[in-house]
Length: 266
Image (cartoon, rainbow, N blue to C red):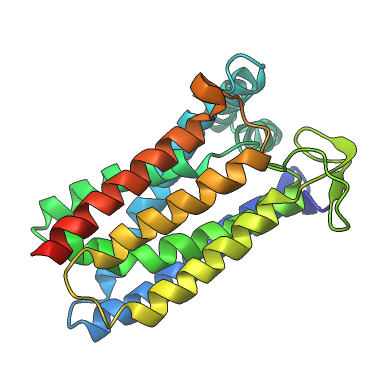
């Protein structure tokens, strides 16, 4: 695949990094149009997406480090973080670039979802906005951004699945970690699922019956998709043979069911 797109001196541009930037830029552009159409200041979109990006990256990285402490990848990420700060203080671009490569080698979306949720929630209440209305603005673009991000995972060769003999199975000789055995391209499975969810939420965003409907539908659909696809992933398994992502997905599904039931009953 194509983990590195090009290099300019010590600066390395990765395909995953490019997809992340693209995801945030596209989501920012579209959410501002929705916010303006709803009669609010579209600059709110800049504030929301910026905070979602910061909180999301921090949360995604912390989750990855915690889940991978036992296999050494978590410590590699911590070392990358140290190299970044060390390079900043010593004005060493090569060290900063090396640190970014190590630090950026793993992000977990569900950790990013929680991190972004915390930071955006703080912004919403600080500015006396309705959390459910803002959540409905954001919901379709969470799915869209996640789908674009999975393209980056595929290009880098990260987050792939178990060995497979299906015709579309892929090898990732430069992956993280590398594999020459054909495996499920679970990145593409998730990408397809999230693009479909984005389409569904976008189609229904002006047909909602109550505030919060889109975010609850998002939680259910994404939680269900990730729970199912996770059976093909190689993530560590815990109690009852389920991964950490599946337990989080289970919580997402049940929270969504509860609030959809309560609101529809009202």
